[in-house]
Length: 232
Image (cartoon, rainbow, N blue to C red; front, side, top):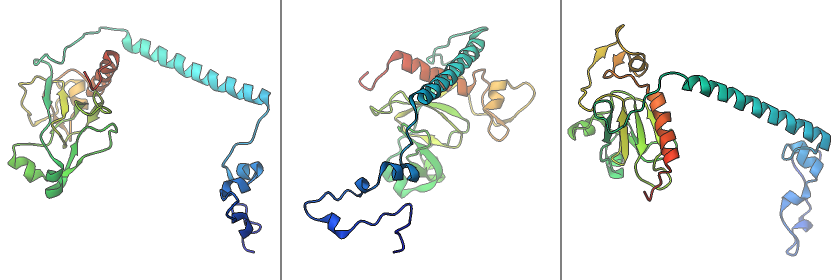
C-alpha cells in the first residue's frame, strides 16, 4: 500500500477500532517513531544532562550579570522624580467615548485602542470624519496609555504611535504641560532629544524633556511596585 513505508503515516487494521478497544491512535506509535517525527526528544545520559544544565545556567548568570551592569550604568547620574499630577509638566486625560456600534456603523482608517492586554490588539477602525463631527481628533503625537478598567488589563501601560484614538476607559499621558497646544512646528537645532525622538514626519510635539519610551517603563514599574489591582 502507498503508506506502508511512510515515516509519518501508520496503517492500523480496522479490527483495532472495535467497540471494546481504545481508539486513540497516538498509542500506536513507538517512542522511537515519536522521536523520528520530532514529537519527542531523545533521552540523554545523566552526565550530558548535567553539562547541558550547567551551560544553560551559566549563560543565564552571564546575562543577569550583564543586565545588572547595564542597569547600574543607567542609574548612575542625576535623578529627579516628578508627579503625573503636575499639570505644568504632564498632560493626563481620558480618551473618547467610542462604542462597538459606532465602529460598525462608521468604518474608517483610524485605529481605536481600548482596554486590552496585548499592545497590537485594537477595538476597530473608525471614520475620521465621524470623529471630527464629534470634536475628536486622532492623536497628532505619540503618547503613553494606561488601562483604567477591566480586571485583566487595569494598570497595563503601552506606548502608542500617533494618528490613533483611545476609548474613554484608557488614560493618555504625555510629557508636556496640560496647557500646551499642538503646534505644527518643523524640527530645528534647538529641539530637545526627547522631543525629536517623538516627532512624527518631522513635526515637533510640544517641548518636553522626558523620553516617552522611558516614561512608559517608569510608569509600568511604579504600577507594579504599587500593587494596583482592579478592586483598588
